[in-house]
Length: 424
Image (cartoon, rainbow, N blue to C red):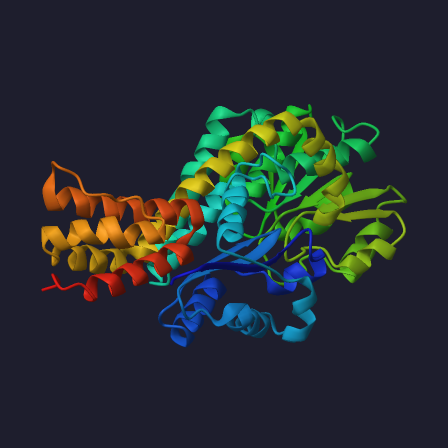
């Protein structure tokens, strides 16, 4: 029977130096999906990659037990799979379903309530769909996850105040800057996270903000939209000399800010301290920068304390959200159990309909009771009613006891049907 498995790493199990080696952009994600689909053609796959997690969701009878994912992920990141193994977690069946629903609803995020994760889950699902890697089970699973997250966001206050990793970064800057509102802010990166950073800085009163982009056109467009200054990569030296705080959130596979380049800038700052917060994964700033005098460097993992405060403040909303998740998990598992039994249920229905009415009544009276199936002869409704009651009893067992006990019942019923004299 088709099962669901999730294998991955996240901010709780692996530090940023491990996560950044395994970070997957769209191109790498598609290559991994194609490789897995080739290796396990009967499997279904969705690969989710964010700054805080890389996870593979798989369904099907032949999915490699996570080993194929481990090898493919390690190969794409150029690392030894043995070095990844200690950081991996794996969940299956109901645990896997609950994990995805919690991820989509931001309950498993570093910053609970962040709105970005749901969009990232949808992007991962769309990519898998385009690549032909998702099938019936994962289609249903991910749509159920979107429904669960929508219910969480619309019926709880978990996303109040638009919390995000960007907001946590600005809160970290507030804790370390004597005069944040008057500080010269440099935001590197003009994607969604860069835009959120600018908005959060503006909300706390910062007015001297410059966005830095490797694409001058994109940088100017974002700066105009947000009413801030735009800087180009050619101006990096002068921008860094003026900045009090730099937050890096650009998409790049290698360090954009090296120790040597920043050392030169620091020599020209006359001893003024520079606060750098790098929330990109892979990291934009070489961690060796932290040894330079006059620099305070923080990475995304350093937001953990602020994230913990956020979680404590949202305890009531989290409890409500978890209850909603439980309800949606139960509904999906009922569907999954029925879907897995579909072919067997069809075979049982056909077998029951091939019995004559007298034989079916005798089977219900003499045999099914021994299987704890409360199906008795009825005076009205005839054969169709009897068949309906048998089928209803089987699906009830599936919902209450699980797919495996229900499958055993069906197989025994099929054996009994074939042993009856009235079987055509």
